[in-house]
Length: 223
Image (cartoon, rainbow, N blue to C red):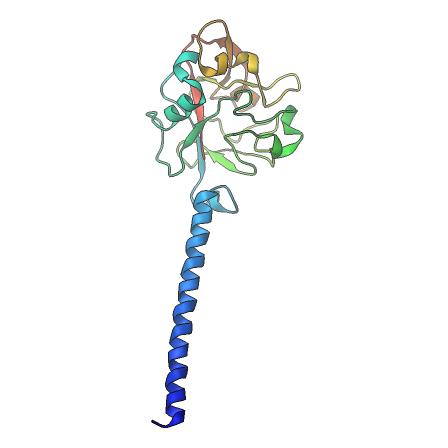
């Protein structure tokens, strides 16, 4: 076979190999990007791509003991009759010292670095359970800075919801250790702070305290 024909065949073979390698690399990069988004759902534009993040009120009510701590509360958020379908699940908006904190200073003056296992993410718009009705958009610290006015109430109906948060006296979004039903595990001897689901202002997060033997709902936030 003439040399030039051999060279032509080798060049064609090399082009095929390069094409296959390029396709393999492109697929690998695409799979890596997908894995990164699944592992870090709140990075980049992931929340917008996978749909609106929702907040809902549990249908079931619980006393402090019945909540069963944060683990029990999160489980209830994902098994409640009101829980909408979700690929990432829900967590309870129940503040707890050292475990689930929005702010360590009033209105998170230090930014999102103050968040500890917090349930809302910075600069994110949250919606009602229907996924259509906008509630409000968090700021860079992952909160609605008080005093705030929501676009829509978290629920149209009135429910008293456990939160464990303080929203008065310059202590906005601070966990209230004395009013978290002994880490959301007890009915007796302690109180819990509550909010109102149909309030458009800070009363949605905190408006009073009640004894922990009362049956109350709580908020669940999509992750």
